[in-house]
Image (cartoon, rainbow, N blue to C red; front, side):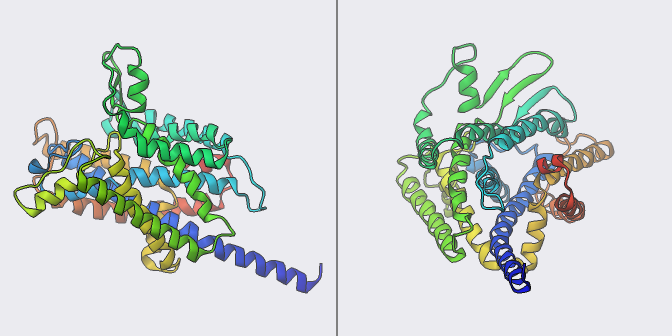
Length: 397
């Protein structure tokens, strides 16, 4: 090989790395942002749980600070699951320009995430095993398993299925089954949250019905094509911006007319604050179309914004750190919150019924800020370890 040819290959390689970096950085930054938002919501569930939040929220009985915190947290699950689909498509595009099937990896990692949900993650919430709560990690894992089968289908069929589920599942709301009826178990897994096992030493409850999330992960896989090596970053940014604007515009139309997309209609309140709160108050379990339009629309706009910011921005650096090791952050912060709660209740006792809780909501934000700073350093260390490690199991974290 001649020196000039070697230099040409090196320059081409560097150009390719430069082209890939911004898109990966924007994805990691968005994932990192929602991890921090999720942290705030989980702190709320530890030290402010005595003020329960319904689904959808009862706006007249919910303070503005609590409402806004919960509304921000709605962004987390749609982003997690949509980006899981995008990442699955990126995984299928190897560095050698050969397309590889992500099916096996999706299936195994989906099973791994479900195993984490029913073991480490469940214990971190309650400090005991009296109820298995099948929550967001369960929804991600099961959605990945479904996607592992569907990646063998043509892309157009994956897209149609995803759009059909996301835009059509609200039509299924009138369908319901009582415990003991044929179809109850399957429908509880797919659409209506409830107990799979309501009696006995260990109960099992579906908190995240998975059908709409399957639609989201399929759309994420379809949208992954925007991050192909041949796609111009400016074109991708324009597409993401237009998608975001289109989602939010459609939301305003559907919600404004109280026509379709949300089972709870909005009404004028006693003041403008209550009216706005009612307008943006959507069902999460399962996520309504309006819920998904709002949060995916915001996600598209944030992806476009983060891509424009560039990798050297300090805020991007911090967000990428949290987004680069999401499973590590997720598990460790839950156990940190469990330990903090045990310490607080051992010192102050149960001051809110059977729970410990703070009286002022601002403590949720204070504790979240402190914990995010503390969590930054181990997350950064594990992210660096993950990059240099060649052990297969590390990929699952």
